[in-house]
Image (cartoon, rainbow, N blue to C red):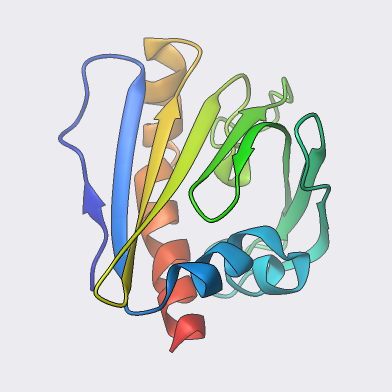
Length: 159
């Protein structure tokens, strides 16, 4: 199944939705277990030499993507809310090195929801950027395309 992107927003938000043929518990594990995360997060040909998940409110999320270009792209944030099997809320740190933040943009709030129906799980990423300008910069840098690729890689891993 392909990723569904919201229409180009005029405001600060981007919504991306993808349905996986997998139970919610398995999809949740893929989003919360560093062993799984490092295998699918990032563009095709990338890897994640560093991935740390401190799955608790106030806990840290750290991932470093080694892109196909050989560059290292940090993705750092803090968990603001965790509802097991249903919802993760991550706040992107203020690292301004890249507008996409390797998937967790600087000064953004990313809410990931997991909804299961008939053995399929729909994941919705709702990203609220600090400003319209930051959203535009992230989109220009490939935010939507990068997430579509990452979610495709996740679908392949889920089988």
